[in-house]
Length: 366
Image (cartoon, rainbow, N blue to C red):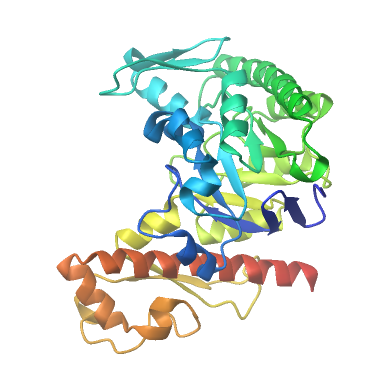
């Protein structure tokens, strides 16, 4: 298994970098099936341990044959540890759970029982699900959190990563997995906006030994702008031989910017959520997106000016929606709330992300 040669070679296929992986949080990209994703050219998806352990439940996932068989998706799957979701739940409403050195204990609203997500448990679940890339549990923070909170996050993230790696190695050895079937194991670099904490976290995680790393923490400032400086610095801390995942980064402009900084994997619910709410992407990829201006724009399908638009969303796009249907028809579908709008719009935005990352790869290789 090659860890990084601008391609990840995984048990269920390859992922060429840079790549955008849509969020299939609960085992599905909303409104699409596996065949739709394949037709878009999607090479991998991200699913979420925090959500899957609740719905449909880990025993159900295993009974249905693991995530690939359950979802009908035969290409690579990355499973997020669930640390960010648990952090969001507990930080926003402490009565729903607590973080400790042991792990994250939580009881979501309406849940009949309490869940405990430990570094060992999340690795156990991800391996039982049959994932291709396992991500260690981390203690996520907001970039503006106080210094003492960031220090605690880094200490705990390193300790959790060490425990997760030990559990990963134990299970892989017990299963006697050959190299070509062994999933990759990623750790997450925390430290907020502090360079010395980011360095400490990266250096200790590198010493433990992982196949790749993720940028940890919220990647945007309070104005919604990318934290470019600290994101770039975090990439510089990790040797180029290791792939880096820009967790939660999905705006087309930010994907292009971070790919130029050396990040290879990206995931976010943004493109699919934008599609469902009527924001459709238009890309001019004649130039290099990493340096060109004005190459990304948005069509608001609900605008009345589109009611008789006979053109496609994007003349340059080869997706099903653009090949077969007019913008005016999509406007009509959106207005009447027809479910086919959700499918066609989501196909379009995901195809836009695939076209973007293909162009970024071409620019890199050229």
